[in-house]
Image 1 (tube, rainbow, N blue to C red):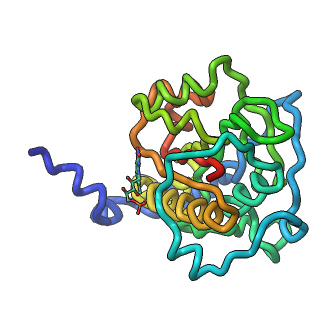
Image 2 (tube, rainbow, N blue to C red):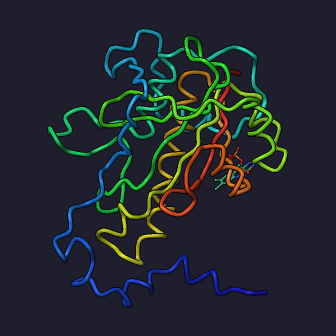
Length: 247
Ligand SMILES: Cc1cc2nc3c(=O)[nH]c(=O)nc-3n(C[C@H](O)[C@H](O)[C@H](O)COP(=O)(O)O)c2cc1C
């Protein structure tokens, strides 16, 4: 058995990084904390945090106790307010984040937030079926791509996991490594993966609190998912997915 991959889980790599030569130490501007909308991309406003009317408040203890992976979903759509809540809970700015700050509802190593969030909306009231990208700093969506056969392509890109095309939406998080590399160079990769875990756990708990099932998915075909999201596979690539649906 090849166990060399174990090294990825350790922090030995840090000793080999010359932190005086990182882009940050060399005075290079950090990459933008959010992929900017492309010219002409339509910005879709989301329901703002604090003003939700339909999002029930389930106690945290109960949400934690009920959390489990759910793969059977009803045909019922998610409302825009529910989607807004799930996006905010997973990547949104936390209330009181200072102007120009990038403090979110989830932690991130060095506050670098090297993830982008995509939502393949299959059944979201008011949204045409398409893949949307979340802009955390604006709490808004942009339509990224509108592929034909979205549900089928999601299933195909996840090795036939049918529930990935059966829910109301499938979330996909990509990594933009340069954001983390700017500070941590080759010590970036493990912490990007750790960051993704926090994001998906918040999705599980937020989903539980609104009667929405969630199942994390790390088994996917890299090329097919990258192609579906319209990302280049080098500077940005798929890292983690989660199917979401009413139950
Ligand atoms: C990193 C990670 C990857 C996972 N990938 C998949 C997956 O590809 N397909 C799937 O059906 N479940 C996936 N799961 C869900 C696990 O199977 C599930 O968490 C586990 O069986 C425990 O069940 P529970 O979440 O209900 O406690 C994944 C979970 C994690 C944390």
